[in-house]
Image 1 (cartoon, rainbow, N blue to C red):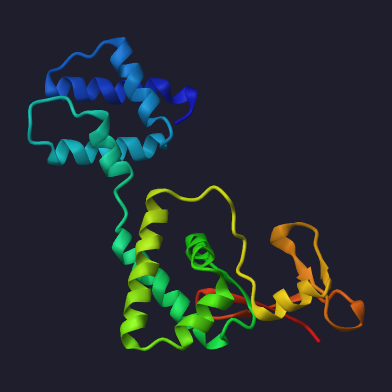
Image 2: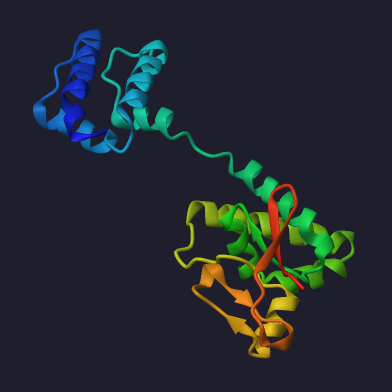
Length: 206
């Protein structure tokens, strides 16, 4: 909400006071404002309507009840499963190309597991039991990162091709997110994107 929407918010709070027959102090209304101002006034109004429809107690709804509707908890288990499926769909590349997933948390999980190349190599040689354990570890890490997202960015996961060229000094960068790598003849090719459903592989144009 914006500062010029304080009056609208005040009218909304006055309506709730009338419905629940509770009078709030200016300081208390100010606390509601401070907690709810990150959300658009339209969403706050819609949430108030939902609370009125579902709040069964004759008490003034607390800010936490607004937050529960405005920012519902994520189904972390489903998110972790989806992330695992995206990684599995990318395995056929065998870690050859550098890769960017739409979900940045996948980058952190893979980085924590030793990097894209290592993950591809290790999972390729696992039997069913070992792979089941690996999947459990992947999802556990993903859920942990959902609760506490890392601050250090991992823009993409490097494949064997780019790692090899980097080790040879064939690397030119503008910034980390826009790295391109040199191939033969010391020239810097533009990266070409090979897209799957939700994944982008980065390779080099010949």
